Image (tube, rainbow, N blue to C red):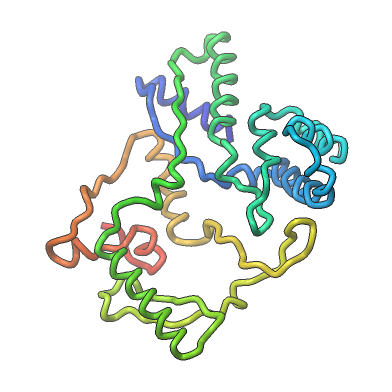
Length: 270
């Protein structure tokens, strides 16, 4: 992963482009095989030793206890991580027993590794560009964007449908609205039983029925579109700026759905 980013930075630098933006999913660290194994072991260790760890006052003390209980391979991996990342991996889990990936500064770990590699290349004379990275977490800003007309119609439909389900004593269901690329009057509403979304996962050291975490569907059309275009986007600065959100005007402008939804439902992007 780091090698790929370094090669891209070097290639852009040779083209006179000592700038760029990389979007890093906040859950990335969970899908690096070694880190995934470490996180799973930490989940069990923290759950099994909760009483002992609760008597300790500092993160450093807790870290020493946890390291002593991990297999040597995983303990060595944790010791090799920057102190900040290692500490963040030990933070309290969320109510569902998941590691709080939004609190782990994966982007800073990547930047540090890239900076080290580029410095070595610069010393060897194989890289002559400049690298000054600025990291930013967009998690909450992404949720706080100005809603579009489509967003307002969609959430209104979800709420209205939820009320209808409740009035008809349909409990244990999620409100669902489908065919969202059509006009609002042609949307289809219904309820999805919670049990259809559940599977057995290990949480806090025990097997429990939970709602499966939603991940990027690698066989879905949105990811296929990304995979097809990302090399060109990375090298040639291709991007789309649709302009500000429109609240007034023709419906094909005000009610437009997201590119992801359009691709999921078989629509061609203009």
